[in-house]
Length: 167
Image 1: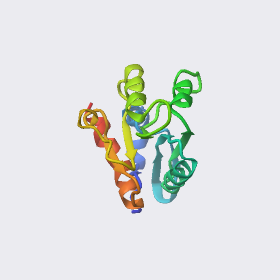
Image 2: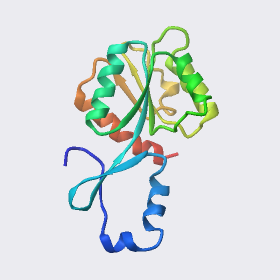
Image 3: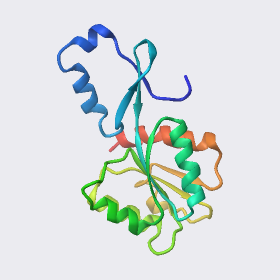
Image 4: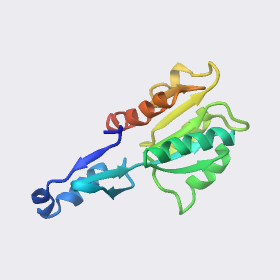
């Protein structure tokens, strides 16, 4: 079924009072909305924040997530993301996808600052080097080594949900 998150809504169940509202409240940390499809299937859409100083990497990640019917917000620096984090326009993501090696503040420092404000935040950290520290593996859901295959990225996106539920 295309590795998408689908939910079959039983028409009799959905008629019961507050069933869908209760379900939405349960999945709210992961999903930003839904798009109806044929035959009673609903595709739930997750929001991801992407932070990388390389615009081409941001573009490819955004396109992969778009192909998976997810929403994205893209930032080219830790400073830009932290500014957004404090704004009234901030929307809670299913996960923050961040490069580790960036000018100024690195991905580890960014993750620590975000977690201090939003302890339920989840991270997918990426790096082209060997700079993945063991002490940060428990705070992050997934580590990706660049370059990564599209299939590895999709698996990382789908592993965010179990990590989120584990907190």
